[in-house]
Length: 556
Image (tube, rainbow, N blue to C red; front, side):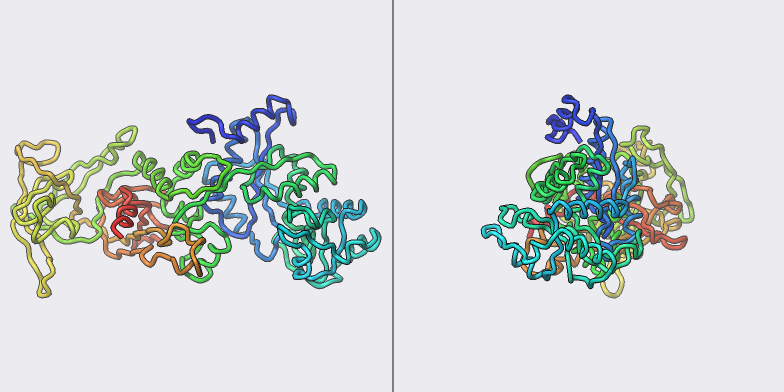
């Protein structure tokens, strides 16, 4: 994760720890997602930081699922998380679950009760919240705080044995109800939940809270550097308190700024709303910020890792422009994507002086930017072609360097043509464009002496393949929908998806497969979607060739 500016503060901390012989120079980080949704682009930064730092200092990273909230967690999410991490190019040393430690964590709670540092509280959630006070007012002690150790042990055992209903009792740490840190005001350690767990089944009906499970799990695994995002900074004193009172391995927490991306939302709760309320087609809808959605849209692991590296590691929160992410994928695909011809809004061009029924094969470069120049392919060419409708204008202005009556252009990898006339239907729509070609102007062997300012792409009518093309744009109309007034969903961009059913693509794309990337000349970067069938090619636009969004916003 280092940048040209030198080591970041986390690299400096780890380097200093190694130099001082802390933990015998050992580095062990962890990535601890809760399996209650799909990973998003924000998680990719945490993944890159934790795995990247471990790799940099010859350490290891554990993958640990924080599965302490059973009603929201599913095996589906576990598998999707593992798939995403592997796809990004990282491998974990060990796969653990907080639920692996439920027995140990329960014993930790018993130890704290025996030491007079935890008690069972019968207060309701509302009463506990009221007793907590405010950041400027001290809290009030619970009337159950002075229960005896014996009574607390008995009640806690009965909680485990399912003798109480949900909400009837909780286990709280006994710390300081006057602490300026609200998290130290007798925080909850356990609550009752009669819910089936995706791994432990019905063994447990009490589950530890995040703050009681997380630090202890780190300590059990002997994590040397527990790296998380800034919102957990206020949790650190409680993290340290539990470890100290239980005399566990002294794992230590370090915080960095999380990744906030504009024109989207990063809250799993809000993303789940978008899925459940059918605003998107699923977690991997290419408009979503999830890693699975970015993969489906055509983003590469390299582009996302490069993006995380460019964002860097900082101590202060900031909003990152999605344009940086788009720059990273353009930069990567420029070297990887074959250039192909696809006409999204076709209109027929007829070359009147080219022999009818004749077809010739023309050589076209696959990718001039590729390291090995990408090789070449053959394109069929005849007197009937599809071109883009907006490459012709009936009354072309002076600086229109495409087709109009009397204007000439080069057909990419083919010939120069000059427009003579066009046809319209009864409604006044242009249906055909008639041109003459210059036989001596063939690309690669042009002896015509002609020069033209415009080059347009085309697809031969006879061999053209019909395809569905999905043009994706930003999911929201505003930069930070979560900060706007009212329901964030009212800021959804109604033009975030435009589907073209009858695009015409060159015949080489007939065998295109998932995982392949293409640059549709002059249109953007595209990939094959998983909805593709033998009889229906479906392409997703990954990104435009240039940042068109900024220009559109300036117009408004």
